[in-house]
Length: 167
Image (tube, rainbow, N blue to C red; front, top):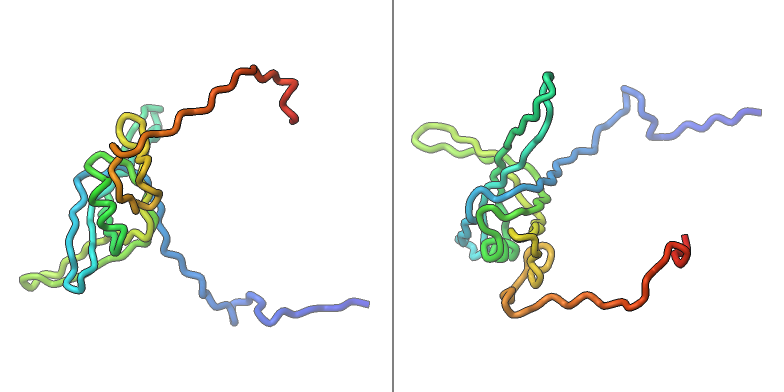
């Protein structure tokens, strides 16, 4: 005896509905200029900056090539103030967000600007290899780095041999 099941959402050309759209961006790069903080008429903060990303590849002859891309990034809300405080030109940042294109007309000419609207920005390491210590991930820091010192690593007196490792 054979039992045939027919799913009500079978993917045939006549009833296929594409309801999955995705507009998600993850970028890690360096700021090309200091962030610009502005206040909107409703009182919310917005910060804008440019992020450079690099692509390193080899051409057909095997020569190493590097190509830079520049991305306009905007951040709204409480993160905007933290970004303007902690990030500067050359700082590394991981940006998570979506792509949007704005259009406007000025002097009879239509203008377009494609930018990344960031939903989350994580700070990269400071120059010199240290981290942002007291600035939490996502950029909500409020105290200065001079107020805190990193905890010292614990000291161990005994050596660990490979036989002591349980795996």
